[in-house]
Length: 358
Image (cartoon, rainbow, N blue to C red; front, side, top):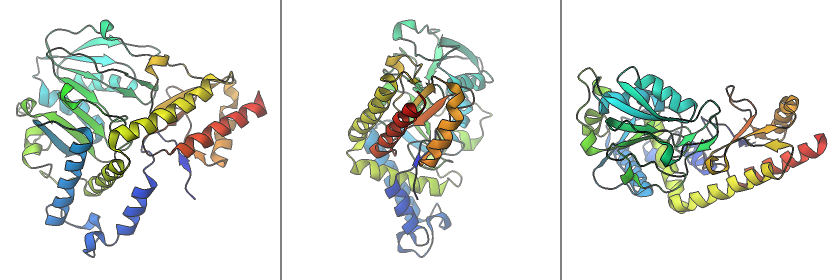
């Protein structure tokens, strides 16, 4: 029986996509083999890969002058690859710190260049800085931020103006959740395991003028220019994850693209936050203007009831609601694949649990 999976990542995938992958698992494209068994350089997979990239470009309205890379290592690898590809060892780079993942990106970048923190919303990390609160170095090779923090449940409602510096964004947890203006970014990267597909794939969108200047000691498989020159086939890519991403892109297109999924996501988040705000039993600690549409964090008025809440939720088919060990409490990750019915079931359960324990 399928349950409602609120995991932060690896996260739920659309049921229709999983069903198609199941049906094609042993015989993909009428070739008598699984997509996992064929050559990444064969004509069949090359066509599928190109189609997936074309669909992604269409969904995001990627303008001319950008390369789309399908890479391995997840977003955490990009914490190192961004400075290795976009900065010199003596360069200054600007980072905005809004929580756990931007903090990790800062720590890794500091191994390769000088990091200037343009804003730090700690120690609570329950808000994002306004544009006026951003203090840039004025000499940055790039400016990096994390539009959505999965652990704290905070999300930027605006795109920071980085001036002349290229803006870099780790969109792992909110890419494809609503339309964006790609032209405002120098580079976007996103691990796949939340809104794109299975873990193991990382998508990088990078402006062409920013590639070609990787440090001399950058491994070739991590050099954006080398990867782009080989259409992401420099080494064997994560073929099954790439195939699955292609299915997700078509699923999104069939649902009205990013405008359609944005309305779906807005409604889900609004309903869940309304249930929290209308209750004295639950609370959300994030500033209203910074609340994430993807990761809704909340706490019980009586924390001693957390384990019972989680146990009863599991029994009700509501899985993976435990908050991250750093933040505690509870968390519902409601990415694109979470249906409205999942929010209905969660809200009804929350109300019933409150009635039983208020």
